[in-house]
Image (cartoon, rainbow, N blue to C red; front, side):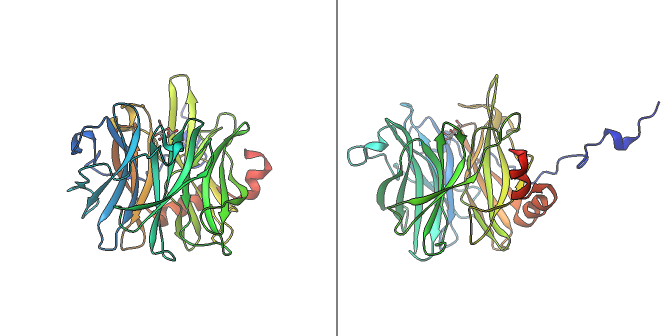
Length: 335
Ligand code: BMA
């Protein structure tokens, strides 16, 4: 008997479209590239400096297991990295006790109003991970504001401009109901309130059940804030970190306009599947090319290396239009 081919196809499409394309030079940075002894380098914040240089603020872990941040600069964002000879930002537990077990996973936002970069990062305190904030003009000296979200909280980034007069911070507190993305507002970057749930982890068998978090800072597009987020699936052989997409209203960023049902990028390459923590892709930063469409997404691979994938904003939005569901449908029971 011949089975008609359409009955063998998935209802949506015949194959998954690759939206993030791995760079052939991957992994682009590993511990071997470092000018001093380290265990591993991964999860880097990213930005383009005024002169066009790509700057990565990398999470570097030493053999004690504690992390600090170190800057790497490159003309083309792929190779020829100039890495700071010494750590760029070390934990400073005497002044900031919440940094006693290191600082991790920075996200960078350039804020035109301040003419400064705002770096939010995880400070690993005795009470668990919290969110800290620092300002810098040059990634050489930093003004630290200390912890702004108490433990357990991480995966945060600042929006580059005020919303209705207030700064907006996305972050991921852990609650007994699960780990969801929240947004909070501040008049001055120090005092935070008006906390709102922004995106919930789904439940049950979904790839993003129970635990999600912001990956790089949101990407501002004419259609809304485009958000790449990670979902953590717990399996009998460990956790799987994969990426999904959602779109939020430009002037009301707690309003989800579209959310993709499927993940769009997950561990497949050897350097993503095997490392200190297997099966992890974890982007903390991106840069945008001059065409206003090409994203260079920098991600930690298996908690051991930094890799690069490229994507087109237009294609990501097209994919969300074809595969996303609106906020209303999500509330109707998808979660
Ligand atoms: C998350 C963060 C990341 C890390 C990932 C996988 O909770 O701590 O820094 O890359 O786990 O270990």
